[in-house]
Length: 536
Image 1: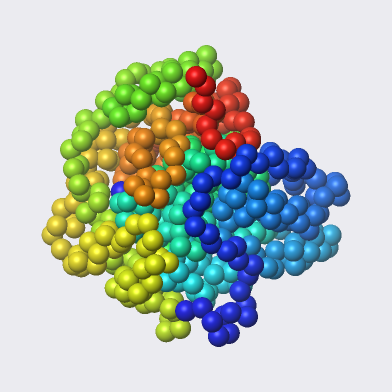
Image 2: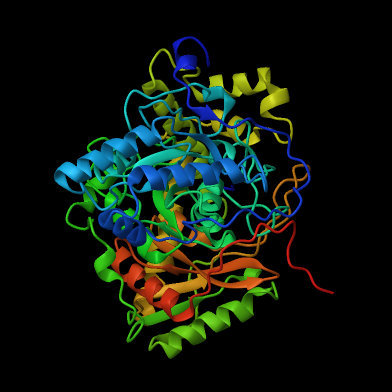
């Protein structure tokens, strides 16, 4: 989102942590050794284990070595905050289970990294990248972590992120956290990876894992996925449970898969769905959620589709964006899609500051509830205590930017305030009824397509992020699904388009995204260059 007490018994149970470091100049260009599993898909890994060529142990061992080579050494990606000290033991158990009973699910033996705001009840901590929660181990898994384990996944570690999912300050540097340091873009090491699911995107792009899980309130899956050249699925709010995920907004928060291919993202999405009594937003997903989205991976999925092109005024002004969008639209036409261009949003610009107002109210209410549920042994129990901790440890927690959003949220009243409900109603009207719903209905569209955002900006801890434009709010505020897919490059920096649809239209969007991916095959693995490919 970009509006976007360690010690005692816990110390003995800590996983392998990566030391933080001040954000220095980008390391010299790194040339990592060739990686045996580079760009390997989940399907490839499953086949290798089925044939006996690989085991869960051997695959996990290779990804752990890759993390060791690239995370705090070499290009110093700082995509991973901590690795699971039990990863290899879990892999061994899954290998034994495969031999005895066969695979337990679609991710049996597959190493997955998850964002450090997704709770796990193991030897890893869950902190949202914040020192205020250092040492915090929740009493039970988040729903999505539990579902991943049930599917046979190995939770390889916790991915770095923008601290508190980028809701602490308007002057933050995306991908920086007081626990994990500054995450770097693997395509140009002096560039930002965006956020807040920075580490998840970088780890997937740089082959530190088979795939990753991120979370989004507004842009936190699709923006880093776009900027790091991978596929990101931001699902309909309620398709995936948020219980056990450190929250910002119960009306916009969701977890989602981040992977190198649409197929891998679809596999991961299906493994995490399910109705959760601890998250009432999942109740409407009954009868709509699926456990297998791979059935929609149709290379001919664009044929006969009606797709509307939504233009962002800020992105249209960037000369790097229109050529990439035009090429993407041409590829869709060539694949048989009917294109409606342009498609206008009736409520464009009418929502004003409503989203931010909603987020401030919900941040206070939702975060207080999460922290209270951690129990009496938790290092902090309220947003107010987090603010106080940050002030006491300002030199370590706030060396570059402050916590003005936290202060604004703490000043808000309860969710019964008329101002909150007025802002929430405005968001739903302008982004749903008069937004996506109106555009799809008027033109009888299957989906919208739009540039996801601009290219990666330079890391700047002095001034914070540079706004290069984004269309993430359209689906984020509506609570509707969006899939971002690589679409091109500018100076070696990835650019992407997003497919956006109505609520619960993930099958349609996956079909369109897969067909587009197969028609264009734009993605290239990062080369860990020191800077962008600038030419005179």
